[in-house]
Image 1 (cartoon, rainbow, N blue to C red):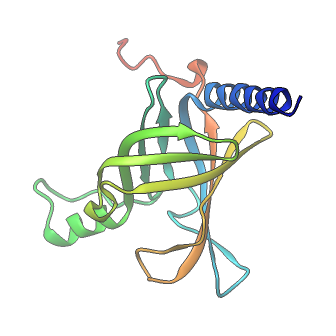
Image 2: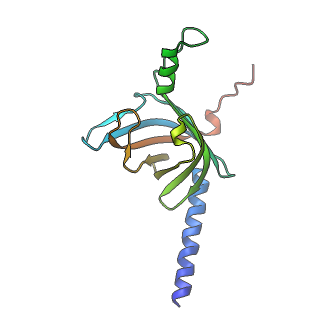
Image 3: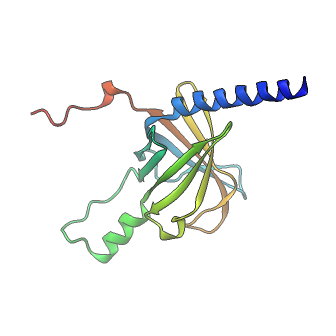
Length: 170
């Protein structure tokens, strides 16, 4: 009898994870990226009030992220100056790898990153779905800019076909 209950629970958990993974699949557009310092209750915008970027989860288990500050400064000329290059680097986050979904989190296994320190690392994102939005929360982590402990909260909305522009049509 106990084995039957365990099997039933494992089956239910597996089905829940399959449903969560299906819900996660697709392209998500960033709405906000907030940072809460462990030293304060205040939240700040990581990439300004209007960040831009996407997270994509493919059915084959691959994922990719590109997040940009909302007020990035375009270089004056090409090639960009060293200062402009630094500014562009400091106003972005990008990585790719594989992912697995667990009951309350998605685990990213990175194989490439804008920051080589993140290559070959595991990035855990606790997630929930609230009013059609995907809400990420990180475990307590160290901010790579100021070196202080913090928790990030990222809000995303699923990109639906009607929002995709037919840019190839002229």
